[in-house]
Length: 145
Image (cartoon, rainbow, N blue to C red; front, top):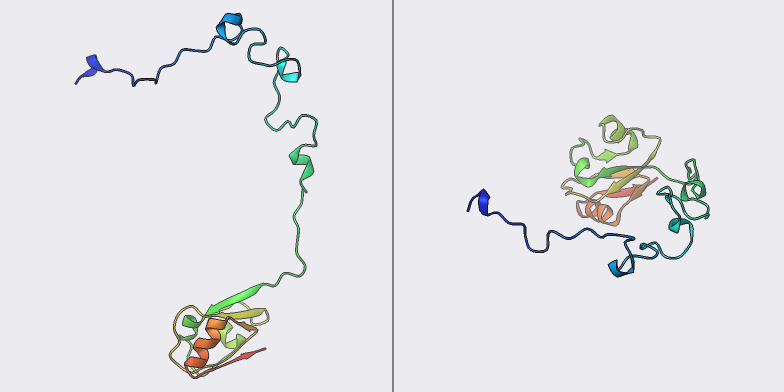
């Protein structure tokens, strides 16, 4: 095998379609453009986002954001993170002091990722079911604010 006997793969080379060269060519007459209409005319082209007179998508969509005034921002702490805290009582101020949350004034939710071996008395705004089970199983207590 060398450069002198290289061949194109079968079917990889196709003849160019000769449009508008008479009816015998298979695409004569209207030259594949159909009958009448904007795209059948000479020089016919339109922008990619043109929707044929329909109100264009960029004009139908709202231009500015939406702020949900009822959205709740939760600060998440996993059960495995609570393992690192010294002492037997945990509340948002202690979590903030240990760098696990940014602000003790915002909502805190305890999630059940990881394991808990020590009995802790935890106070937070919300607990997942698995977190509550793990805290109780370790002999601790989960209290909602």
